[in-house]
Amino acid sequence: MAFREPGTPRERRFSARYLVLIPITLICAVTVIDSLFPPEVHLGPLLVAAPTFTAAFAGPLLTGAIAALAVVAQVVIGFISGEPASRNHQVQIAALIIVGTLVVLFTVVRDRTERRLATTRSVAAVAQRVLLRPPPARSGPLEIASLYLAAEEEAEMGGDLYAAARTDDSTRLLIGDVRGKGLPAYGHAALLLGAFRAAAHRKASLPALATHLDGAIRWDAAQWGSDAPDEEEVFATATLLDIPDRAAQVHTITCGHPSPLLLRDGEVRTLGARHGALPIGLGGLGDPGGPGPFRVDTFPFAPGDLLLLFTDGVTEARNAEGVFYPLTDRAAAWGGHGPREVLRLLHADLLTYTSGRLGDDAAVLAIRRGGAP
Image 1 (cartoon, rainbow, N blue to C red):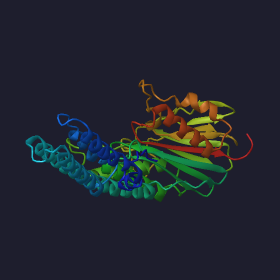
Image 2 (image 1 turned 30 degrees about the vertical axis):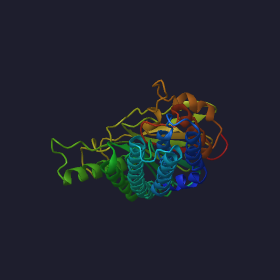
Image 3 (image 1 turned 180 degrees about the horizontal axis):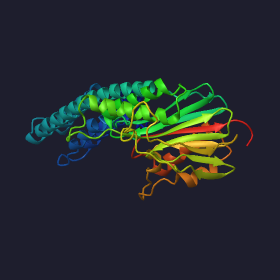
């Protein structure tokens, strides 16, 4: 979800129907008042405010019309004052024409930029939906909900990602954050998600899956020679989970990623990794087909428990004083809610805490095992 401020050409056309009365009223008022004042008092220069104000909410055509109306008003003022050919009056008309022309040119450039930006936003939104397909609402005994928050609508696409896959008797999940921003990070995120979706449904062990992902990232970097000194190293922090249908457990492999939170009976527990691994792309130095150096941590995950997985865009969000968002403290109040409600509460609370401005993209997954706790 992105944050957006109003101001697109369509929105301005809607508001222009009413706001245009303001510059028209200003032009009429200046014309009438200037004609009533003594000749030595000149209010004509105030007419320049009319097209300038119009440019804030209207496009080139309406702004040009108001600028032309202001010039006509200045000419009328000259005839009423009896000095239509005076040098002062001619200079005011010339200045009004120049300023009006510049303002109209500004609106032309602005509208072109906004149309180009709107096209970019549309393409990015479609790519985001294709890449980050929402996980199913239910998978076996699990309820799942997802949330993606973009830092800025104009910001480059980030590398935050999540995915889910089914095996015969369990659900596997991935949440991660690829290093960098823009198209390179987006491409690496697509590669990681593709490798996960291709292999996660198989009956291979969780360490073998992690090794497969690690090998995919390293192979992609090596095939183009990106291990050159002037190239940035490609890696992704990630957490892999395997949640059996019939066992009240969750198996995890944490690769340099923030630890999940477990919400149970109004309490919050951090599932800290006892066997933490290097980020994906930096480990798996053994045989790519083998289990690699990745080791599994197992935690209780009983019916009614809720897991909260997130990227560092959540915990590194700051308020106006620069204080990080206290996710663990806030999550304690969300116990007893379902995944969708927890993410709704998190979303609203995070926007309030940061005044609607995130410093980085953020992805969140909420998973609850069905049944009474």
